[in-house]
Each structure stands twice: as structure tokens, then as C-alpha cells.
Amino acid sequence: MRCPGSRPPATVYVDGVQKWGLLTAAILSEVAATLSLRAAQDDGAWLVLVVAGYLGSFVLLTLVLRAGVPVGVAYGIWGAVGTASTAVLAALIFRDPFTWQIAAGIGLIIVGVLFVEFGSHPAEREPAP
Image: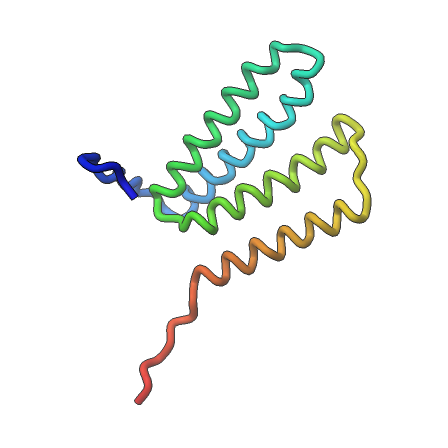
């Protein structure tokens, strides 16, 4: 939905590899920003990376959406991979707990995103004879 009098958003023309490259960059930017939040507890200078990371992530995610990736798919993958990556990296970098329940939760998130992805491409049906 657009505001009255606004122009439609420009479409970004990129190939499939570029779409997923942009989404990967958005995820990496978001994960860097989230992990920097933890580092910012001890050193406020990390807040610059937090702001830049989240801003970059949303700009890149916007480009992914303008390139034609459905919002449910793009946001689902962005959120799921970002959450999983943050949990794993926080365990490695900050020694956060990583239990079997966390691993199972990440697995469920991934399964959920796969359902969203496959559901966004309904099988083309042959017309009835």
C-alpha cells in the first residue's frame, strides 16, 4: 500500500544469483549488528557497527524485495538464517549456551522457512480436459 500521491517503488532488475547474494549480504549485516550489540555492552564504540549493520541490512533487504523475491520468503530466510547464525556465533564467540533444545529450535525454524518457500511456488496445475 502506498501513500496517496507517491510514486511506485523502482524495480531492481537482477538475476537469481544476485538476488540471493543481496539476501546473503543482508543476513551477514544483520548478524554483525546483532553480535555487535553484545560487544557494545563493554565498549560503546561498537554502537556505530550496530547502527550501520542494521541500516545496511534493511537497505539490502529492501533491494531483495524490489528484485521480486516474495516478502514471506525473503523475510523468512533472513530471519531464520540470521537467528540460527547469531545463536551459533554467539556460542562460539561469547560462550553463550548452545543446548540440544536450541539446536532443535533452529531446526524447526529452518523447516518452517522451507514450508514458506515451497508454499510460495504452488505447483502449476494442468487444466481439466
